[in-house]
Image (cartoon, rainbow, N blue to C red; front, side, top):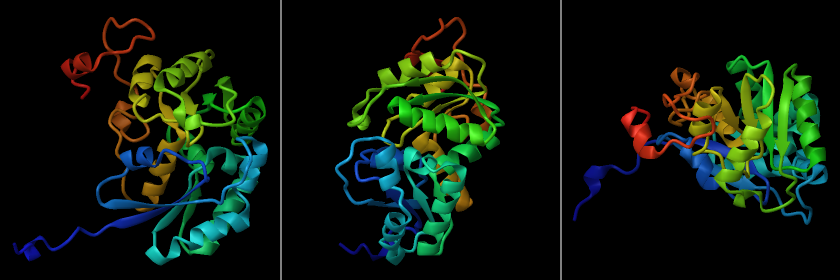
Length: 271
């Protein structure tokens, strides 16, 4: 059979992703990526340290980042993203900018981090007050609160899980429960931290229930990286990605906290 007429795969644009050694949600990142873009993922070297401020510092050292980016140079990505929230906020805003500079020098391409992308997203959504959900211990969570405060954004509520390992195994139900706990005071948006915490499928539900934009670590990372390419992330009914969804769909008569069945969402034209 002659398949020459197919011509091969279409042109692809590349996003390089540097992730910590324990990152387990590659598939989630891909869900925000349009067909014409490929992700090229590499990981930092393993270190025998549980999730903590110490680990955040180890996986974000400039030499480590530089080596990771250089492993991607042969495939010529157009932008490089560091996919780790704690690793990119542990040094504050100055530290985050220095990380981007170190990656850009190593790859000679634009570079972003998850925490830098978070601040971009807060500006995009005009957020002055934010609620936070984290899987972290109290010390790592407090460091995130300090980072957000440096950007002039008030933290109005926070819920954290206290985990030091296996964060990628947290079920959606626990993420939703923590989000409800965090949104106590008046907030303009909710941020769910950690690139190892699954969030893709819960964002639309939480936006509908809480009636505010909900952003997550992996979402803002992909959104900001794809912006650098002049293209858009894909994510139905997510306010950051679809401006028309920024008020969030709310099913008439639904009780607060209700999980709307998929069949009812279809009837209401959500899907």
